[in-house]
Image (cartoon, rainbow, N blue to C red; front, side, top):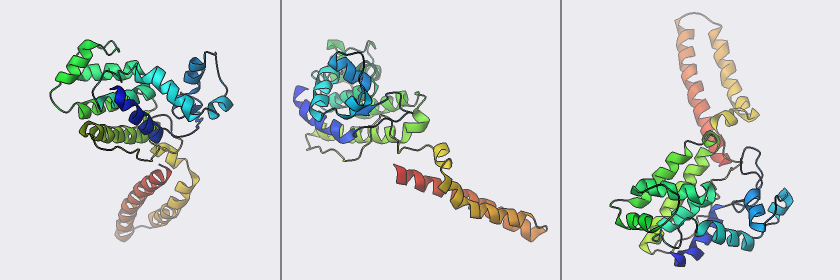
Length: 250
């Protein structure tokens, strides 16, 4: 609904971080979730430089969100809570994709346009539409080739949006969670393979590996028993080290 727009924009800026230009992000130079391509289209030019993206003001970003995402995602027509979810989804994956996912959930033609049929199906939906819509968004994200790299951050984003949508639906005062859980590429979001590339991971595990090697040079049942214990300890230590490093980076 239109009255949700101000709150939706506040929450959007709570989710979207500042300027990033991660080479692994197909969106390229981005600020407040606005990619360089989106900014160029809004300004009616063929391209903009990373410096121009970095200089983007929050006021211009809000105008882009109003014109290019809120209306196209059905923000003026959908019920409170669902309107915000469609808007947030649309910012990250395109309004048409956001609407198609919602249409799949409610069982109408997936044309990517919010019309009377879609609104009627949303209003008539029996069950937890917020939960079903969040689940469908995650299902789509898991099909993307960048999921292994950015999936943890995306999952946090969808979970946060789901909670906020429920608060909005109940009429509660909703605050941005303050955490940058953008579905855009988050440089701090590490996959396990990327974590293992960090030299400090191997430095921490090197001592355990060295100890295991020393045990394996011996023979006899005692040495083999110790080796089995060391293998288990090594695997457990590696797991918790990777998890700790990922949590610190998130």
